[in-house]
Image 1 (cartoon, rainbow, N blue to C red):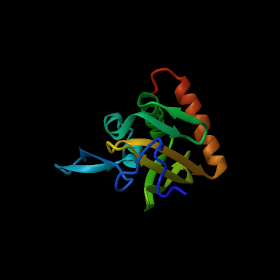
Image 2: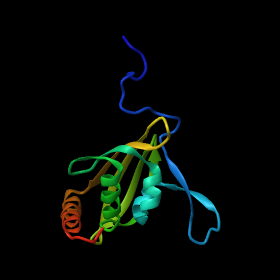
Image 3: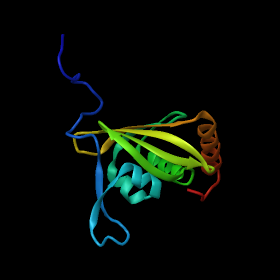
Image 4: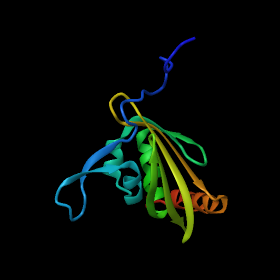
Length: 150
């Protein structure tokens, strides 16, 4: 029986699974690490481009998407759908968060895996309860179908 991770895995675990980009935060006057959840909440395309691998895979509540350009578009669109994003805890590369969708509370989970270069190669987003998830999915569909909204 083989021990350890399979050698043909699509990504490698490198140290901690949390990934950060240094970015000046407003008012701080210095470069501080910015997490993926913070970049999503802010809709920061530049930070997202720096965090994500070229061939990133994003498992959304609706379907799986591939490629940095498509994933950045989706994550920046999500930033206009969910509000008041606050991390509640982190556990082994998974960030749990609270937010609102149309002023209703949601609980979410963001799971990140990095490649050997330290970029996020795979991420999974989940949200509950179902009614707010469905509202978010409907808003995403409208936002993505309206040219110039992203």
